[in-house]
Length: 255
Image (cartoon, rainbow, N blue to C red; front, side, top):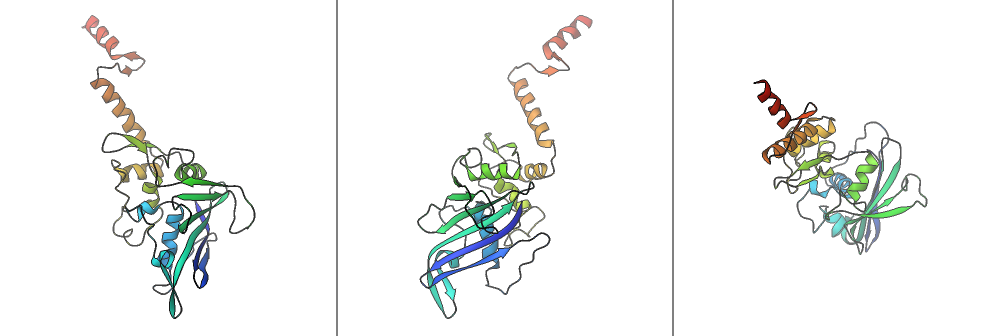
């Protein structure tokens, strides 16, 4: 996934404020003095992709600064924020671009992300669009879920992993993205990035690394677990084209 452009729009009683950041190929460095919005831009990228679980466990409010949710400092005075939204244009490995749009403050549902099927920021025009949901059950498994759409757009086939309660779920994107998008407040505290704990996924760091490196360790572990479960329940195990019962019978005949 390549970022191409970020746009933040903030409507205040004093008019429209905001910023636009372009992301060309190669290294992009964003430099600014303290309190000039660098963290707001970084967090806005994560929020636009529905990754706020990387930033907070609270779903009631999006984890963004008051400049996008309450009041914005404009020169010598502050202005109340009436509406705000984030636009983010991204590109996949195939060179296809989409633009995601998410409301931060306003009448629109914050848990809806509109996907414009084209480069609506770098090449403005009319593109087909569709709404997807986040922060609801099925967001990674249902066709109307944004993370289901995003995984398919990226060409990622998410593996099924086990939770502590024994249930199985997809390896959520919120558990993978911390390895490729560092959140500055906690992200540099250790080699392994902090990942959301609310999903209760077993060995979540291992599962994410195995996925990113294309390792078969998880598939082997699942196959071993299935064999152990079948063995414990008295099932028949297939070994080299025969069954354990058949092998035992042959052993007795030749014993």
